[in-house]
Each structure stands twice: as C-alpha cells, then as structure tokens.
Amino acid sequence: RDESLHCEGITRLFHAFTKERDCLTKAVKEDIIDCCQKTVRLEDAFIDLAFEMGPVPGMTAKEIKKYIRYIADWRLGQLGFQPIYMIDEHPLPWLAPLLNGVEHANFFETRATEYSKAATRGNWNDVWDSFDRRKKIRANDDAAPEDDGDDMFKQAGVAAE
Image 1 (cartoon, one colour):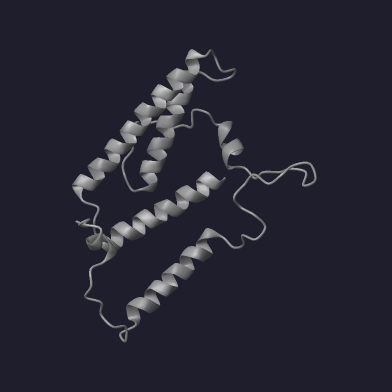
Image 2 (cartoon, rainbow, N blue to C red; image 1 turned 120 degrees about the vertical axis):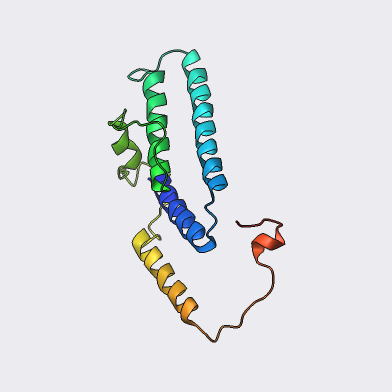
C-alpha cells in the first residue's frame, strides 16, 4: 500500500528529473542495472539466511527469490528499462492482494499503522497534474529574472551529465 505509493512517486520523480536534466547517460543506466543486480544478490543472501532457521510454511526459498526477480524486473520496467530476469508471471500471486489491498480493521479494536490518514485527500494524478500546471506557468513566465548562480548540484560538487 504505502510502498506502492512511494514507488509511484519516486518513479515519477525519476522520469521528471532525468527528462529535465537530460542526465540518463549510458553510465547512469549501467549503474542502475548494477544496483538492481546487487540488491537482488543481497536479497538472496537474506533469504538463504532466513531459511537456515528452517522452512517457511507455504513458501520455498526458490519461490521467494523468483518473486524478488519478478519485482526487480517490474521496477526496472517502471523506470523504462528492459527486464533482466525475465520472470513473466507473478510467482506468488496470492501475495499481491495482501501487499496492495485496502486495509480493513475495526476502528475501535486496532490502532492506525498506515502512513495514509484521514487527513490525506486526493490522488496521485491530482498531485502530478498540479505539478505540471505549475511547471508550465513557471516556464511561460518571461518576467522571471534569470539566476546565474550555481544550482544545488554544482554547489554540492555534483556534475549532472
């Protein structure tokens, strides 16, 4: 639930940032793929460690590792990359509704555990539509003075390619 929101937000940020900065070079793409592969290797090591303690009812280490690769390919696809693990079908289909479903609970018997609270209103499309409108207004505002100062990346000593 919240992870899905976080992933959608960071994916949109990634696309907006790389488009605006034109910084998605071959080296950056290779770094992203390397990070993905390293993350999968670390997940594998964790799964192996967890299964050293004994079996998990209803799951095998092999199924979970396949799931990790499925998710890695899915996230890469969201970033515009080709899959590297080629897991076409969700290896644990029963898990999707548990991770992405709406949480139902008796209000009087539980406490809130989600980040999303009643004060949160709207949806992501409204957020990004508003962002796009503000961006267009800003781009069309010819009266805005030019700032010749260093941007935050230059100030931090980071060169955007």
